[in-house]
Image (tube, rainbow, N blue to C red; front, side, top):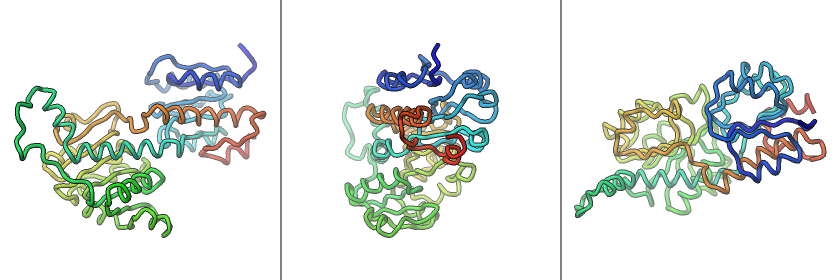
Length: 333
């Protein structure tokens, strides 16, 4: 035991990240992935000065009730709907996320899902692996084109803008978007993006990508009525959070052929997936891995470590870069 601040890392991480933390902290890293219960989280946080947690670790008032030493919770993700920010702020505990370092990797992955679903790659691969490829009919496996078609983006933050750049400049696509507020004219102009109503976005997009953050207001933002507005040939991609799309409604819509295909990296009730989605051939399903490139996951863990070091080691001489509730810094530093 030492007099260094104590840090708990809720999931296995890279050796280089541990090596960076150890000069500053007494570090405990979970050796295996585990879904912690509320009581398990509370027990672990009770003796810690800081924690690095994942999206499946839901931390609110109950989990921090006895965490009198806790100064910061660093979330491994841009979204932080797993953290009760109000409860953390009330307790004087800083919270941080990993904004910006994963923008490009997630945008790349959105395009992988878009292309895969538009061109029916997952169903064709399963058909091939099953040994059916003796000959291919000329009109078999017909998908939809991407180049020159209309790209719609629901949520035009940094990731949405990265997706738009790829569409406008790489695939010569007209770009429509809907956001809480329009982008500045110069930013929208550089992206070739036009602000439209949500209803127009749904009706006019050939390929729609969802990138809005999850909140009570965005729960089931896309449900049966919204899906019914889409073209029969359209594709829909969700890389945001499960629960923004009503998965049951989407399964029914895909089965009925409007929209024509989907690419999903996130689901309601993860790690569970709606069984009707699992049975459909016109949807690409992946297990919440849009940020899962090696450089990006290293950068995410490194940014979480940076927030801890800046907050808890005065010798660092730097302000934590991505603290979400900065009013806590003014109260506690």
